[in-house]
Length: 218
Image 1 (cartoon, rainbow, N blue to C red):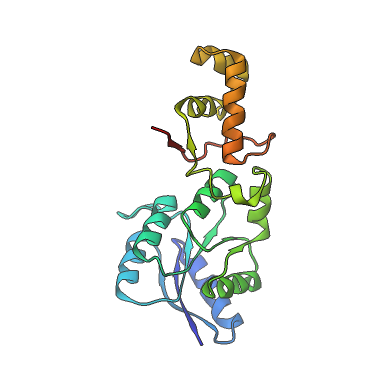
Image 2: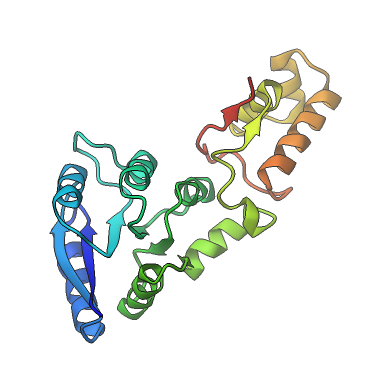
């Protein structure tokens, strides 16, 4: 059975290259049915045609519809049954984690070979998850375990933990954080440790990569 794909990327050369790679390498199992070069066309096309798989770039600015994580969240809300494979050059673990938190089925690097892209498309279309090795390596450097990969953008921190993490992400040491917040260094250390445990961060994680904001406990 042929798997019909909607391909979204704001670079026409990329669209042409991926279309050719998938159509030629898949032995008729994969077929790019339509290509779009922006978020407005993406949502419009999905509303008019049926597809078995969406392969989309992460960053496609310039449209009235959002790109990035808000785009993926809206796609998951409006087309919940459509498997999504995200094609991206992202190297920031916190943003990759936010992508996974939207519920997409797969993420693959833009540097992936045509064969790797074909395998990823087949796996995601079959209802399985796929993360390329590059993405897994980036995530493993930040998080202690795989269960934490998609939770940083949705984990609830207390207001005090969030304040500490916001300053720590800008590279401030414990003493300066304590001075800024008017707390003891011991309190800051405890609050940072609690936040790290909730987020599943490695003790040596570079937390100043400006990840998406966590939800704040009321």
